[in-house]
Length: 293
Image (tube, rainbow, N blue to C red; front, side):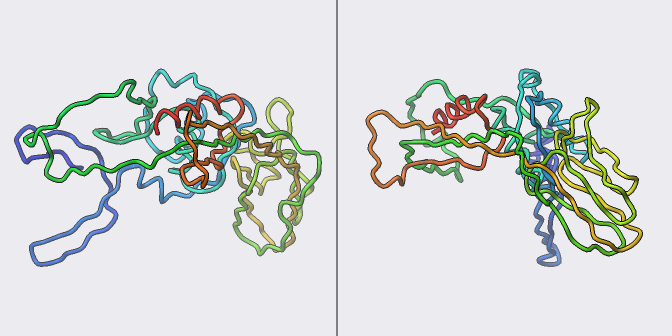
């Protein structure tokens, strides 16, 4: 932990950091590299998840972060914000980026031991002021943001497909296996050595594979995660997994700066992979990106 900025008696907590690398450069000198909790999350694999209906942000975060023992705090103004959609396999930091972008939130660890999730705050007015030489930091730099004249944000709206797909069909050796789904499915059926077909269902009787983060046991030796299947095979055999896909129907939302002409499209920002953006929150998200730039 780094506690003190200037080696003065009044310690000031700066944050909690985790040692990533270190080197003894000489007898009396050491070099350390540390990361905060977000850096740790980037190195942690996340299987992915899917929420077919609007779900409160507090619930989504609990389903993702609690099983991984990632501590966080959520601002009270965001508790009832609802989001839905697909988070593809990746790492926990990318999953948090998807969630924050959809919910209009930021995640930071400054001066905290936890991941602090708060609403986005952008300046509401322009200010002109002269910075005196005495106010300038020795190591500060100023960088001009790229000129953006138009923004295209693609929303992802999922509907149940009607064509059965073979998700997995391979010979597996005895032992432990994990199969991650590259897109969301429902009505998943598993055929494996020594087991009859099993389908995963919610408490309400709907057959949905990746609706939330609850683990559901299937057939004794099969366990569904939020977006993966864990298998423990006592003998080798062919495992076949079938299911119906959720079809992604995409729609573009566009902002163009009034009076701006960009013939080369070099000043156009296109956001295509925000898979928690849908028709319900796309316009708000587009407005936030517009205001940022």
